[in-house]
Amino acid sequence: MAVYDKRLLKKLERKANLIRRHVVRMTHLAGSGHPGGSLSAVEVIVALYFHILNIDPKKPKWEDRDRFILSKGHGCPAWYAALAERGFFSVKDLDTLRKLGSKLQGHPDMKVCPGVEASTGSEGQGLSMGVGMALAARLDRKLYHTYVMVGDGEMDCGQTWEAAMAASHFHVHNLTAIVDRNMLQLDGPTAQIMSIEPLADKWKAFGWEVEEIDGHNFTEILKALERSKDVKGKPNVIIAHTVKGKGVSFMEGAVGFHGKAPSKEEYEQAMKELGGEP
Amino acid sequence: MNLSDFKLESQRTYWAKALVELGKERQDIVVVSADLSTSVKTSLFAEEFPERHFNVGIAEQNMMSISAGLAACGKTVFASTFAAFGTGRVYDQIRQSIAYPKLPVNIIATHAGITVGGDGATHQIVEDMALMRALPNMTVIVPADAPETYRAIKAVADYDGPAYVRMGRANVPTITSDKGKFKIGKATVLRDGEDVSLIGTGIMVSRCLLAASILEKHKISARVIDLSTIKPLDHKTVIKAARETGGVVTAEEHSVVVGMGSEVALCLTETAHVPMKRVGIPDVFGQSGDSDELMEEYGLTPENIVEAAHDVIARKGR
Image 1: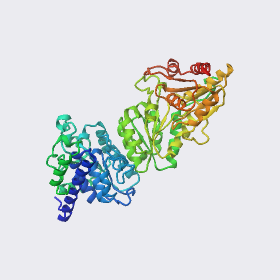
Image 2: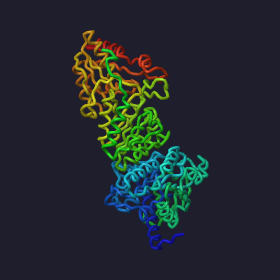
Image 3: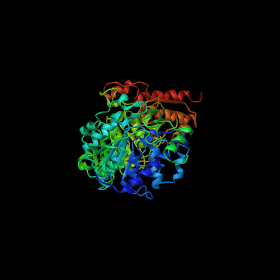
Image 4: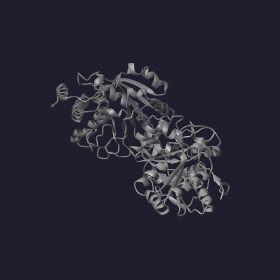
């Protein structure tokens, strides 16, 4: 196990906590949104934006930047919060989530939001877009890496597997998929709605290098993300085992918070738990 | 004037010719196919530029979103398949991955309409124009013949946004030339006339020309317009034709319920009220048959256009 500097891990943990507070506040202010699937994705997004990705917030369209696609577009509050904290736009803008005229649309819009690489929301399309980006990098002999976060609910989508097959067929090793395996989808537990296990074996059968990690443990996340860049000849998937609603006691593992914003009381309680000022 | 007076040429051959030329001229041109590369002729591009051709197999959803990813990284993408599989099967992928972010992906759809022939209704899409023109940011082009197809392909390659170019499988009469530049959004008056306007698109433009020559024998002077861009519609040319000739017939190898004729009718309802008739496929699915037989079966002959013109003229001034 690689050993990471304690200060780095501490910094990332603080960022994760900050992003969680943003997510709770943003969805509360918006009165709608998807806190559960945003909170499960926080550590992976923080690891990418505050350590892994080669990006320049001042030049969001820099040609050589690494790409990140949030295929599970409903988790965008966490993405927006990370982009704002990383300097792509003002943290104040986070209060405009889902408001008329905002760059922070209910699902990501690459045309209006700096740092957003792909418009997503209708599930199952992001991995294919990522394959396209990885192929473009290869054609241009560029060294950037493309990361795509997919939800475990998106494992239901046929297109996910079309993309998985193609990535392996085209040997795009400059592509990493991260499955946010939070075990829940809108209607209930993934195991009840549509069985997707054995998930790791499915990806292996499609020709991918597979790694399973604790998606809330920064050491495991960093190690897996760094390793994924070194895999040659095939694409790489990290199955990140996470908890939906992570960090807020009454949202953890609660199907009800897939697409429901916290009420005033819930918001205050959540902020208290996250150690922030309401 | 008869159909046999014209040279019959393949739109697919000309599209592929334009594509290969573009591939030579520009490194940013890439092509995505879905197991139909020999039918849609992208195989010719693949032979010349194998590294810039991606065949994704029978996976059109993947095709459209991969195209979006390539386009988001600076590529000008041509995604080509049959019209039935390149629209209805992938409407949501086109909508979210391509049209919403306004990416330069050109969907080149062959085998559109009933002239596909023997394959039958599953392959004879008659509502693809409607699906594509309903999408914000989408440009929809239906060239009249092979040379216009060539020019249209060159034009969409230079256009910074998504475009849908529709063509059939059957060879079509050559009525234009490959000289000059195709202007997106500009209809062409192929023949001037005063008594009625025949507005055609795709294969039906040649039928409008034939109808005009029949009408001439009936002492009726018909204006013929090649409406090759369905969206954005050339309102100016359409309204001018309606006002100057006082009657309009539209003709398309597509459902009349949701097609080009409907769009022209809406335009004229708000601007220039004239008697109008839409020639096209009624609200039904197609069936197997020879393409010429099918054109007769579904009322897409020059005679059908002549009949419609008489009907329109009879209703003038009522």
